[in-house]
Structure formats: C-alpha cells, structure tokens
Length: 554
Image 1: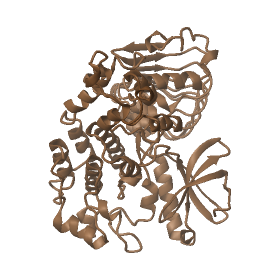
Image 2: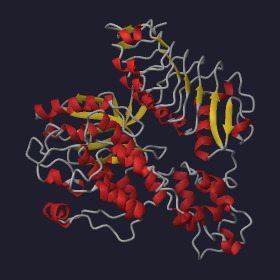
Image 3: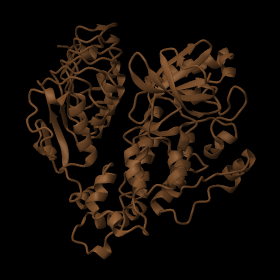
C-alpha cells in the first residue's frame, strides 16, 4: 500500500495517520485539482462484504449531511482491492492535538469551539443520526480554525443498528473515556449518549485533562459507573453546572438535546471574563506606562492562550523567534504594534466590549478575519479585472472599498453585481459574521456555492444568479433564518432542492429557475408561510407540485 502512489483518481501525497480501521493520507484529486484527505481501509475489512455494504451506506449518508461544522464527505470507492473514503482536508489538526500540545483552552476560546461542536451535533441529531463516538480526536479544525466533527459515517459504518450499543462483533460502541453509562450497560444509544460525550469533551477543553482516564477498560468503566465524575475544584461555576448536567447518569436529569446545551452556553453566563479583557487592554492601550505593559510577546500569549490551530509556517517562525527574557533589549519586540503585525491575534469574533479594547491595535476598520475574507474575495475573483474596482486595496479601510458597506466596525453589505468577477466564491466569506446582504449576481463566477455561507446568521439577501455556478445547493443555507430573498437562478446547479430550505420562515421569494436541478419539490417548502413567489421552471424536476405551493409558481 505504501508503494502505491494512486488510488483511483487520487494521487497519494503523504501519510497523515493510522487508526484501527485504516490509514489516512493527504491526496490530490487529479480531476478537480484539489487536496483532500483519503482514508484507505485495512485489508481485513475488504474481505467482509457486510462491513463494506454498511460502510458504503453510511458514507452516502454522511455525504448528504452538509453543515459548516461537519467534515464534508466527497467520495467513496475501490481500486484494485483497496476501499477508501474521501473527505475534506482539515489543515488545523484535531482538538486532541491542540490539548496535547498547548494544554487547556481559555474559557472564551473553549466556548467558541464548544458552540461550533454543538451546532454540528444538533444538526446531525435533527437529521436522525447519532454519532456515538464523539471525542477530541474526532473534532478537527479547518484552515479558518472552525471546528468540524469527523468520522460520522465511518464510525457508524462499523456499528450495528442505532438502537443498540453493541457492534456486530459484540464490541462496545464508542471510545471508553467518552462512553455514556447506558452504553456500558448495553442499553439503547440515544442523542443523550452523544451529550454525555460532549460533557467529557468540554471538561477536557477547560482543564486539559481527561475526565475518565483508566489504564484498562475495566478501570475506565469503574470511573464512569461507580466513582462518577471528579471535577477539578478550579473549574468555573458556569462550566461546572453545564458539564454536570451533560454527565448526569439519570437521563431525566441530563440535557435532552444538544440544542438545549447550546441555549445554556449562549445564556450570557459564558461571556469573556474581566481578566481576559484585561489581558487585551494592556496590549492595545498605547499610553500605559512601559513598566505596566507586557514586556515580551510570549507574556501576551501566556495570558490569552490563543490557539492559532495549524499556524502557517511563516507565522510559526515569527512566534519561534519571540525573544526570551534573557535576550538583549534590541532583539525584543519594541512595541505592541509589532506583536500585532506578527501574530494577527484578532482571528476570532470578540464580544463588543473586547472589540472596543482592540480597536486601536489593528490597522483596518474591521476585524482582521473579516478584512482577510474581503482580500481573499478580491484575489480569488480576479479583482484587478473588475469593472468597478475603484478604491479596492488602495486603502486598508474596508469601508472605503467599492461595494463594501461597513457599520459598527463590521462588514454589513457586499454589493458586487454587474462586475466582471471570475473565479470562485471563497469559503472565507462565511467569516463575515454580521453580513446582512450579499450581492454577487450577474458575473462570471464558477465553482460551487460554499457551504460556509450557512454561517451568516444575519443574512437577509443572498443573490448569486446569472453566473456559472455548479454543484448542489448547500443544505446549510437552511440555517439562514433571517433570509427574505434567495436568488440562485440562471446557473448550472444540480442535485435536489434541499429540504432544509423549508426552515427559512422569513423567506418571501425563492428563485431557482434555469438550472439543472433534479428530484421532487420538497414538501417542506410548504412551511414557508411568508413565501410569495417560487420560481423553479426550466429544471429537471419530477413529480407533482404540492398543492400548497402551486399558487406561488411564477
């Protein structure tokens, strides 16, 4: 296997890791010219037709689940006896890697990561899927440091029916340190079993230590069933209460849904602490006397404990050369702006009070993550050739750029219709958290609609019509609860109309005509009580139009 350099249309580049079921490689899709992660199964599984049938079924299931916090599944195949599954390449490593290298996450970062994990788990539960093997090594980070859940279909493929906690070979479902008590007893696995695992993960993020660690499975089982969780005394009260409720042995006392956990996480009890704000304030205030400022950049890192998952090599080099206390003054950073330039610390959304303390440090008028998304848009769409590129990149103030509206320190609107945009829509646009309108219609854009656009929870208008976009309509667009208008017509989109669009309760107009869509019209669209117009002509749709929608067709 190691001598083979190709599997199907995939060129093997390097090995990334090994597990109980196979070897993971970084590979290149020679047809689509993109890098992916390829999991090649060990040989013993290739001779088990039942395993392969179930594995293929679950790979197909996972491929249908599309969400910004799930690792995407692209392909499944076989080449000369080697079975493999192809997923998105997550360049940021795993949560387990981060904890092992850097220890616990600070409370703010832990909240951000846990929120993303909960969003993904809530989504799969809503689609009647239970992961059953949630653990830090199955939480991966993409190039934007977004947490994504992995091994959904792969882990489930080797298990028996979801109602059972035993595999077909009689083994337990899951990983011992994260398994709920009901699994140890061989009882039914439910959504609450995943929630128990989430409690274990949350504890490990906050403390850096596994909650139920044993030298043997028997010792681990004893800790789960008899000893119970022994929470560190220094655990903050808000995290303690949440984790205890996740870990309740009595299912009636445990959180019933991942959504309920998410609601508590966002209840206001988990805002950044005064100490965290202080850590940033002393960096950004320029008139603080020198003895009260941080003396070296590593002191900033020690306070913030910022995880820059899979930092690019050049940034790693800049951090590696951060001087120690015994270095000459001339070799140390001379001022805080040099620290900001090298480390680009503003990589995650901050609460309003923290943003205000940082405002004087960055050189742009929006957070760096939003600034970088705009620059990537300019570069990926051949911005230099736009008809209306006046002021683009001539100033670092994004609010001065053509088509960009900035309000209250955030990008609120992108209006780039009727230009000569070519290339693809970058996934990083999903980082424009406060965007309310996105107009990219009437251009020459190609590629697919990024699933990350489903993260734009305040988006009200999404207009991508009259381009050359291909692929499916991402199911994640169903997360855009504020959306009132969706224009995707006059492209080359394929696949089914996602049933998730039925979640867009505020939608008044849906234009999908003149594409290559197939399948039937989802009955869920009948839930759109505010819908006034539905345009789906000139596709390859089959079946009858639901009566409730017939009077809306243009």
